Length: 169
Image 1 (cartoon, rainbow, N blue to C red):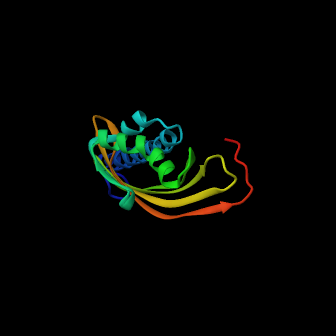
Image 2: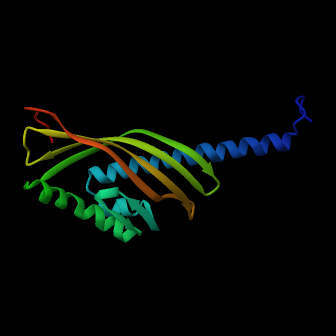
Image 3: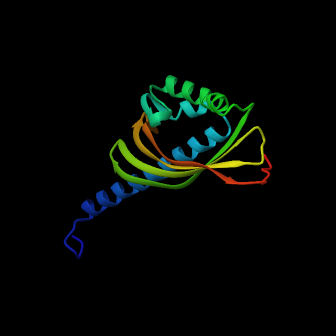
């Protein structure tokens, strides 16, 4: 027996559970970072692979789809829809993960949130738009790998950021 009355086996179980939770949080942070990397590199196949086969993507008024294939298709058509809506010939965007927080891990399920900032430019014009919002995530551990089971967007705003600013990209 340890001095505090807790047995060594119980203490080891507690430490093992804490390590599993920390490892899960680390993997979930990698998953969230991979989402933004795929989005910025226009890697729709890679982005789709981050979701479960029956995942739910809820972008509110911007769209609501279910299933990995539909999510991949949604993202692959999102930029062309933005171009059409804006009456532009092209759109360039960069999405930055600002804060990712895993809220709860319970075995093979977890929840989290991520705030983001996105810079959007149409037709290489001087005006750049800033988009800010929050993703609420649900995750599932499937075959030893964490995946998105649900991603919900709460979009705060899309506003002109500045004038006469030239992006290097």
